[in-house]
Structures are given as structure tokens and as C-alpha cells.
Image (cartoon, rainbow, N blue to C red):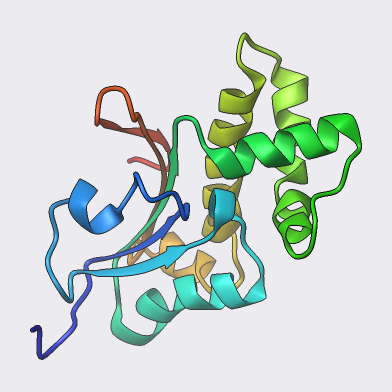
Amino acid sequence: MAQVQEPFAAILACIDSRVPPELLFDTGLGDLYVMRTGGEAVGPVVTGSVEYGPMTSGTPLVVVLGHQRCGAVEAAYKSIRDGKPLPGNLQAIVKALEPAYAQAVKEGGADPVETMARAQVTLTATGLRSNQDLAPLVGKGALGVVGTYYSLDTGKVEVLSGAP
């Protein structure tokens, strides 16, 4: 067991069991801070968790990791499109993904759910990059924030936004 943690990245990923960041990036104990939410939905607690590494231990990289065929994004897409709220706190995920839905509708495309999933990654990474506490670190080059997308079909991770 790792006695010390010195994560080189903080990863915000979906809860999908097919997308474990530690396995995708072949990392060991103590290498990553990992936050997982449905559809990479963010709010104050999640944002604070993402901020923790860069602000307390100098973690130099934040990765937003979305993925192909995301069930949370698909459920949110259908809920918004059909005007049918999801039960319980699932609606909080829907609410958090509304901007990605709006962007996906604006962009169009053959697969609006995949467009929405990619939009969610990009919007979340952009939001974290401009976060009042992370932006100064980004500005001085101490922190990178990237949006990425995992293909379940190929097993490859594509960088969508924020790469130098």
C-alpha cells in the first residue's frame, strides 16, 4: 500500500464502471486524485474536490474524462428533450448537463447524445480552467486542465480541449 500520495493528476470522470481512470491510465496507488460523477456533473463539492490537489499539493494536471455511450448523458438528454424529469437526485445530474444539451442541439450532428457527451467534457474543462481559484494556477503555467474522451470501441483516449 502506498504510504504517501503525490498525485500527478486530478481526474474528474463519469461513474460508468467501464471507464476506471486508474486502469485506463495504468496508474498505481497514490498517483491520481479521482472524482467520479454521473456525466462529469459538477457542483460546489465536486469542484472543491478537483481544486484540492492543485491547491494543496501542487498537482499539475486536471483531466475531465468523458466517454462514448454515456448512460448518464443519454438519460439527461432524453429527460430534457422529452420534458420528463428524472426521479430523486438524478434530476440534479440533468440540471448540471443542461448547458451541454443546449450546445449539442445548437451543433446538431448525426448522434446528438455523443455530441452532448463531448460538449459536457469541453464545457466542464473550460469551467474549471476559468475557476476563480484554478485560473491563476493555469495562468502562470502551474496547472493544465484538459478535456478528454474515451472510446469504448477502440480503448483510446482523445484530447478534446486544453492541450498545449
